[in-house]
Image 1 (cartoon, rainbow, N blue to C red):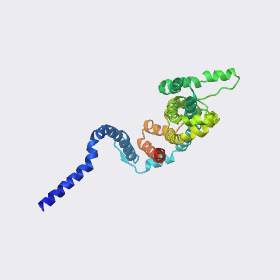
Image 2: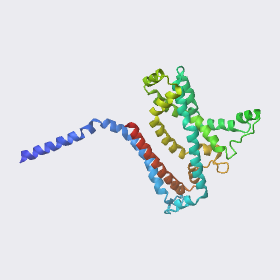
Image 3: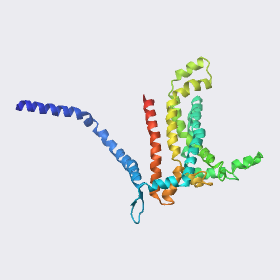
Image 4: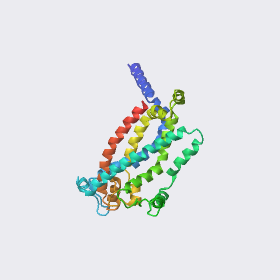
Length: 306
């Protein structure tokens, strides 16, 4: 009996050693992941959980927090500016989609077709992305100024002056054009990498068959990068739904709330009115909407990997 028990114990230990052997072999790799995991938890999930908790409280740093239940959410839904902010955010997302989404794709395809000095064009397209935002906003304020270069050119052509920063019809569009000019370079590099990964034999065979550049783009390039295009579309929708920086820095939501986005409204509740509970409630509502987009993105990423 003792020998049987000892053999069973040895068999159990051997099974455990085999089970945990892969973990022992990769222990050094797991240790390298610990700092990233700690930072991920501290600076992402802890704020998310605290934001959810704060959305049910009136935050007062002097007298202490007070539980108010769903009052913060009621404040959000009864704020007359929330509807305007949501509408402006959707309009901003639509403009970014119609104007900014296709620019990096077109530049990537155009640069991939260039036979010489391709590296120079890559650097030139990416340069606006490295301009500090303080310089960027100052530059475009001058460009959009009533006496700036655009209106000076329009005056020479005999056209009417455009008030980019004070006309509600132009203000949001002006910001989208500015952001597209600055940020298309990073997206262009991603698309360019995807285009250059397409086998050259496909293009050579198409050229032999007499296909022109537009036929090659339509039947080879675009179908080959369609999964990446859909993934970048979801990422852009998530990013633009949170947009507020240029709206705050350039116009502070004006003129007449024409550039007041949902993200900017959160910032105003938190740092202008100091109503952190209401701002947290707005953040939770945005988190739920973006969570749905994130699930879509995750599924599309898995499909692209397959």
